Length: 408
Image (tube, rainbow, N blue to C red; front, side, top):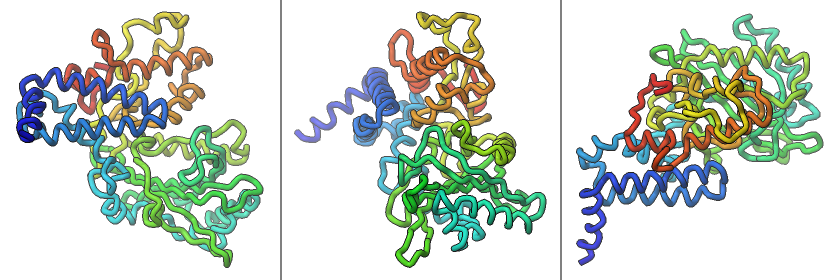
């Protein structure tokens, strides 16, 4: 009796797969949008994802060749989203976190010259930040022209540090690599405490980049935490190794490295050339890849992958608006800067669009930017039967998408 009851829903799914998949896609996309817009909806989204994955396992849908061939996007999407639901896959990669950190240790390590006691003490307080920069200039005096460190301090527009969401001050140091010797270029970022609040920020992050095959760029990540000891010494260990877990890397790092758009006025005039040179390095990188640890194309097309048939109907924005030419996917595609797709960070996306950084070079009024953002999100997450959005259409296999696709 128990076996027959458990088999009943599976029999219905196998006999009517279109109806089940369409229903589950609607529920999944709606839950994803709710989680995108409100962190409090994350658990509900996870329950939906777990239920879908559980049903697919129970009914052995991934072993059904006809089902997999009919819905390859849906099957792979659920599989890749479910990775981060495993306790040892917090990073969202195909291998356990322990394996990822072990295999990428040499790439994402903090350079030894940034771990000296003198430097760590100077970078632990806002008041001693000038001393840290003086030490970096001393280091540059002994480095070759093509190995000069680029560095500047700034205030982030949108994201706090992993250990302190209210901390926005940073010191970024770009450490040049050597592609011939397989030495990665590293973006090393120290969280800086606010004035008068020593030791209130522990995080140090490393994003390392190496040239990959076919002019792509492999990107590697690691967060570290500083420990301030009573004897005034400072030690650094991996955040994950210290037992603080980690975050899904690709949720924020769709482009691998994220260019720096600081709060206006937070970078000194003397350091503006370093900011500009650092972002110029970003433009030299090939399309982002995550080595063997993740195939990001399985997340599908992203924001702005299709142009709406009408230009913001009812929004009050005319056809002469610069928005008409704005599309995220002109740059953010797999063979460009990486597609902006779910899972993604709402704070980051909305800040870039509403804050004026994206679309790059466009001059839009605040109302136009707000309308653009609303339309991008609606076009992506819509589940209407008559006008489905980008994500639903792709998951149902009605719009086949491939890595080189732009606006199909």
